[in-house]
Image (tube, rainbow, N blue to C red):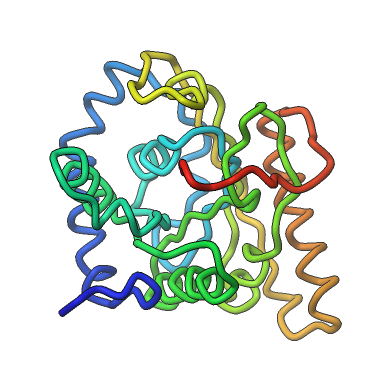
Length: 240
C-alpha cells in the first residue's frame, strides 16, 4: 500500500504505540544519563483516553523529547520528507521518526493543514495522545508566540482534555542551524489538564477557538516564563 502523507492510514497509528515503546526502552535510559532531564508533573497526563499534549516549541528535537519522558505514547506530526528521504540520513530519519510514532504529513497548503488536524483527530478518536505545537513552528529567538487555533479545533472536535507542556533548554541541545546535538540539561513540565468540553457547540465558533487557544498559551507561559512575542511566528518551516 502506497502511503499518502495527506491521508495517514490506521496501520501506522496502530503500530505507533508499540514502536514508540520499543524506542523508549532503548533511548530513555540514554536520555536520562546524558541529558539528565528534569520532568515535572508527569502525573498530570491521563493514563488512558484521548488527550492533547500542547507544548511550546524551541528545537527540532522537541518531538523526540516529549514522547521519551511522557508516561504514555504521544504521536506528533512530522514532515513527509522525513519518511521518504534516500541515503543513510534518509533511512535514519525514517527509522527514527517511525519508531517515535510520528505521523507524516505534507505542509504548506490549506488542504495539508486540515489533513494534519484530521490526522490528530483520528489519533484522539482512537483514544490516543496527540502532541501539537500551537505556535505552529519553533521559536528561533526563545520568545513564546501567539497560538494558532488548530489546537482549540481539536479540543472541541474530540472533547479531549489539553495538557499544557513547557520545555526549557532544548534549544541549547540543538540550536538553530546546528546538525549535531549538544549535551545540555533540559526541563519538561506537564501542567494540569484543561477541560473545554463545556464549550463544545458554543457559537460563534471563531471567538471560542481563539479564547481557548489563548488560555492554553497562558498556561504554557505560566510554566515556561518565556518573553512574549505578541504575535504569530511567521518563520519558514522548511527546517522543522
